[in-house]
View 1: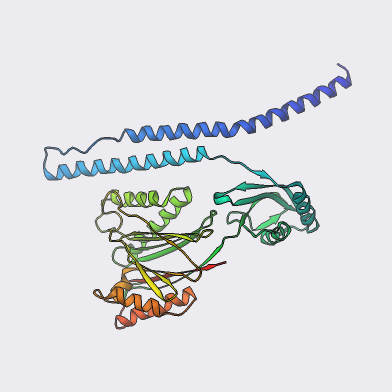
View 2 (view 1 turned 90 degrees about the vertical axis):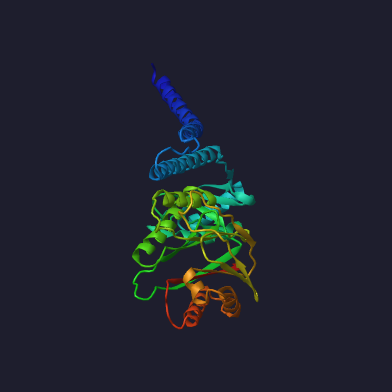
Length: 404
C-alpha cells in the first residue's frame, strides 16, 4: 500500500466513524423511548396483579379489619405503579425538537459576546408551551476565569431585542469550561410572598409549615400545611407532607396525583393521630391563571381592590380516607390581587361563630401593598381578637400579584 493510499484510507475511516457516531446519536432517542415504554408496560402489569375487589372474611371483626387494611394497602401500591407507568409513557412520547438561530442573529450574538470575553456555541431555540421559546446555548470565558451568567443574559436580551432571563437550573457563572445555559422568556406576572407566624403558648416548635417553589415552566407554587395538634411531632408531620409534595411535583407528577400519593402514604401508616392539612396555590406566571387545592385546610381569602372573596372546601385532612375528594378552584388573576392563606389557629382566634365575617373585614381593611407587612398586620389582629392569647399555632401567608 502506498503512502497516498494509506492517507486516503485513514480519511475514509475517520469519515465512516464520524458518520456512525452521528447515526448512533440519532438512534439513541428511539432506543431510550423503547426502554421507557417497556418499563411502563412492566409497571402496568405489576399494577394489574393488585386488581380485585374486597371480600370480607367469615372471621371475627379484627380479622375483617386486617384483611380490609391489607386490601387497601394493595390498592395504594397499585396507584403508585400506575402513576409511574403514566409518567414514563409521557416522557417517552415527548419530542425534543429545536430551531436553529437565524444566521444573521447568530453572527451578531457570537461577535458581540466575543468582544466581552465570552465564547458562544450552538445557539438554538427550543419550543415551549403556548408558543414560547427557550434559547439554549453553550458559553465559556476566553479571558477572565469567570463571569456572571445573568449579565450575559442581559446582553443577549438587548442584542436579540427580547426579554430573557437565566433559567433556574442554569449555572450562575460562566467559566473557562463550557456549560449549557437556558434563557427563558420573562414572565408577564410578578409574584411576591410574605409570611408571618407564631407558635402556640408553651411550645417551642410550630406545627405549621410552608414552602414556596418556582419551576422552569414559569409556575410558582405556595403550600401551607398544619400538623395535627402542635409541637415537634406536628411540625415533623406537616414538614414531611410539604417535602414529599415538592419532590413529586419536581418529578413530573400532576397536582392531583401528587396529593393522592401523599394521602395514600399517610393512610397506609394506619396512624390515627397523623392527619395534617394541605393548602396549595399554584400560579401560572405567564398567563396569570391560579388554581387552589384544599385538603382539610382553612379558607383562602381572595382580595381584589376593596372586595374580598372566600375560597373554601369542606373536605377532610390527609390520611383519613384511601383517596382524596378534592377539586381545584380556579381564578384569573389581575394586577394588584392578593391571596391570603391562613391556618386554623388564625380562624379560631377570630371566633368560631363569626370568624369568616371577622377575617373578611380584617383583610378588606388592610391597605398595605407589601405581602410581608400585610401578613404581620393580619396576624396581630388575630392575636388581639383572642385577647393576646396564642392558643394554637398561627400562620398567615400572603401572595401579591402584579403585572410585570
